[in-house]
Amino acid sequence: MKMKLVWDDYIKPAKLFGNLYFIGIRAVCTHLIDTGDGLIIIDPGYSESLYIIINNIWELGFRPADIKYIVVSHAHHDHMDSVGELAAMTGAKTFIGKDDLPLLTGETFQYPIKPFEPDVLLEDGDVIALGNTEILCVATPGHTDGTMSFFFDVTDGKTSYRAGMFGGAGTNTLTREFLKEHNLPFENRQKFVDSIHKIKKEKVELFLGNHLTDNHTREKLPMLGKSTVNPFIANSREEWESFLNKRLLHLRQMIEQEPSE
Image (cartoon, rainbow, N blue to C red; front, side):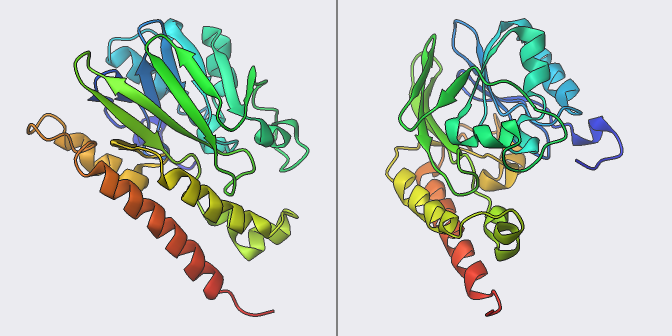
C-alpha cells in the first residue's frame, strides 16, 4: 500500500445498520459485527493500517479485546496482512477458505512472511456462528482458489436484513499475463463466471463491498442518517445483481480485447 501517512487512508467508522459497522480504510473494506457474545471482524486489511482499524473499533465504543473471530474473504495482502497481529493481540480465532491455504504456506505466490496460521479452513456451505450471528460461507473461486463470499442477517433488535458480500470480485488475477506468470489455469476464468451465477440466487438486502467501489461505500457513508432511507439498504437487490452482471461483462470484454497469440 502506498500512502504518505497511515492516517491518509482514514475513513470515519460508521454503523451501517443495527449490529453491522464499517471500520475500514480507503484501500479495502473492513466490517465489524457485534454478535452480542463478541465481535467478528471481516478482512482487517494491511498491517500498516491496523492502527486505524483499532482506532475505529474504539471510536465506535467497542473494545478490541472483545474480538472473537477474524474472517478473511481471500488470501491477498490488502485483506489479511494484519490478521496475525490482530489475532495475537486479541486471541481471536481466524478463518479462511481452505483452498487459499497454499497462498499462506508459500506453495504458490511467495509472501515475504507467512501471514498467519488459520484456525479454521472454510469449505463451501460452512456456517460461522457466534452469538446472534450465523455467517453462511459460500465458496466462490476465481479471484483466488479459496475465495469465500459471506451472507448473514444483521439486526437492530426489531428489523433484520440479509447482508451479502462477494469475497473476490477482481478480474486482475484473470488476465492472460497474470495467469501465465503465476502458472495458473485459464479455467479460473470459468470458475469466476460460475461463482457469480452461484451467488446471484442468494438473498441480499444489504449489499456489502469487498472494496469501497463495489457498492459505492465511500459515497454512501456520508448519507447515513441524513434521511429515513438507508443508502446501504435502498435498492440493494438491484445493486447486487447489477454489480455481478458488470463483473461478468468486464471479464468478457477483457478476454475479447486480448490480442490473439
